[in-house]
Image 1 (cartoon, rainbow, N blue to C red):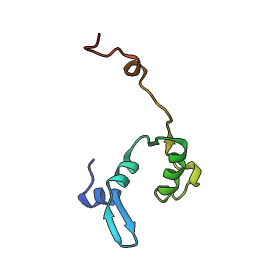
Image 2: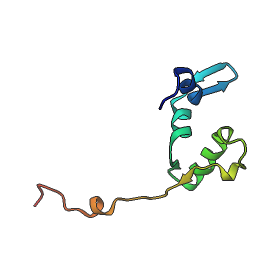
Image 3: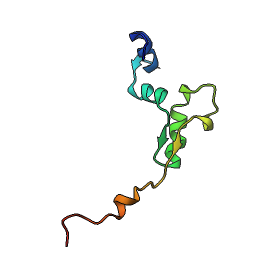
Image 4: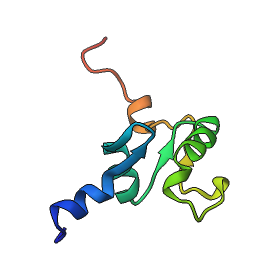
Length: 84
């Protein structure tokens, strides 16, 4: 990444009332190309919960999408192996 150790830790730094912490969730959210939740309701909750990472966005514009009832059709419809 060509950044210093401290710069790396800054990416994942999370300020809480009890102090600072290294957060893998914050690191992942800040570096992911896409973020999604598992339902529309979860998307609303996640956007509210992580809004502090995008303070210049309105809450409903936080870049966390949702995917509902996603199924990989080829696996879902495949025959079971070893059954008669």
